[in-house]
Length: 142
Image 1 (spheres, rainbow, N blue to C red):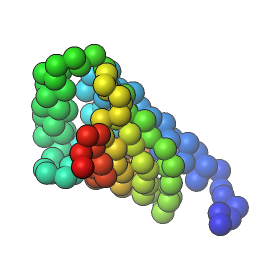
Image 2: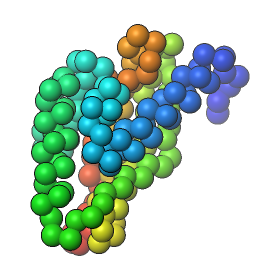
Image 3: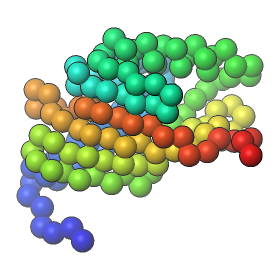
């Protein structure tokens, strides 16, 4: 059960919720420069099959994923939805979080999983320090 929170922790939680939302909204719209601003300069993005370190490698991951999706026949859009965001604020500049995500595409539900995050502040703004993406299932997979 949550106890009484100080104002700084409430502000941190809301800023982290906004960070997670901006990641999906900007990524789904192809605004990768805006997505990269959400990561600390030395951030790590961990996917099931690869690890990307720093802005340049993370940018390449987004560019490669975008090319892969747009190459699919019938591709029109991509939408990530997150739910059940749990945030643990450890200190005024350090937090952890985890949430579920689902990805909808033109054909419907494509895949789903979890984001497992570590957050830090950079120049007073909350940023991803480490984001691990799991894939728990895929449409059509048996």
